[in-house]
Image 1 (cartoon, rainbow, N blue to C red):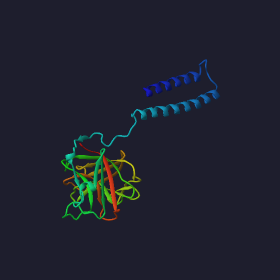
Image 2 (tube, rainbow, N blue to C red):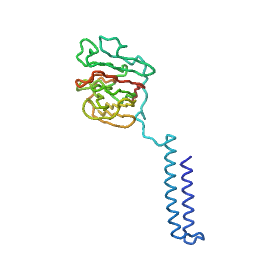
Image 3 (cartoon, helix red, strand yellow):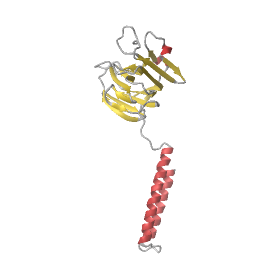
Image 4 (tube, one colour):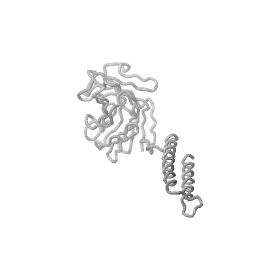
Length: 256
């Protein structure tokens, strides 16, 4: 409605200007008057454009495509969230769930998740019941990482042809999320909630990472395998802080 009104306003204004400047018009203006009208018209049109854009933004008509557009939600229940934590410690000493927020923490000297494992300490959710080996799958969640947590994987795609994982998103000081310990994905993310979307197109061998709805990173995957999503805290091979924590809420899966 705002756009239509604005366009009508511009059309009427142009018609008036044409009438006033037409050669045989009884209302013919001098060049100085025309210049003044043109200046005022430019100002009015600029203001009108700003108002129209503001109206579009306010009503959600002007927006960037969402990462989940075209995807179908995958139902998740508590039964799909399998928790892994240091094997010798009660779960409540490394994990809480309150008001929809999963809070994970671990120490660098903690034990692995089972006695015969040689992996680093972790407290993670392993999303079960939705392992995949083809198609296009997407993980979504909101994460909060307190300052000081460093050298820790906060989200991963487990499974690959080469190696154990297809993707690890790690947090490093001073608040950077990196692809493993290499490419910077996004910076300055400590102490605030961040929306994370990860799309894995298995058939095309491509992984795309969005932070707060913005595409930040695209990488070739590690080949097909028995694939599934995880989130929480999993100490990196080296360079981890003594204490590592992440919080997650709004965890969802989508697929095409």
